[in-house]
Image (cartoon, rainbow, N blue to C red; front, side, top):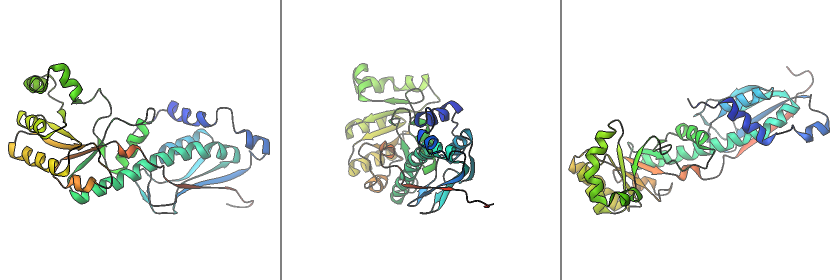
Length: 286
């Protein structure tokens, strides 16, 4: 479960409707009853319907359908719908629509990415970086989980990931590796992850027992060598592939035997193509 506060949902509504819907007010049909429904134009992984339903309620609408997050919805099938006054419907239309389009887009893209990766290696784990667009982290994190991936790291506060930029301050690779036992002892509940940009660095990290060696922009052949070296060394190291990982090459990368595929690509791309139908309620309709 990913919890969103009332304040967060209120801010999404207020951003689009700060002072009411001027158009609906001017046209004069705001009190008329109606319905609104959302359907994806292609197979989509539903996400954030729970939050959209809460947004509906805040605006005085009743959600009549909300498939759970993570549900794979066929093309053309209504997966979220509601009813209420025309004024409330038009206020909710775009604010809820953008939440659904964005979240479903990431969830669907993630599912395709995970399926492609596991076609190369059924046991590989797809993990996302912390590099989501500011202000969207919680929503895209929910979408990533809905699509079948996990978090590599959500931010600087909850993982230990050593880059070249850190190693330079320590005085070089040898100095970092010499401090590795102390790092592990100092925070025993955390794994020590370190990035390598070339094969010799990766090998040195593996032999020293770095928990996860993140191989940045390695070729598939180099990744396979690193994964083989980690198994042979039996040092407890796992190999993660990062950098330039795309939907087109993730199966080949996963097939090298790496344990993780780390990517930021899932955050970027088109929102889901979701059609919205708004209709007045017919007189006498039940």
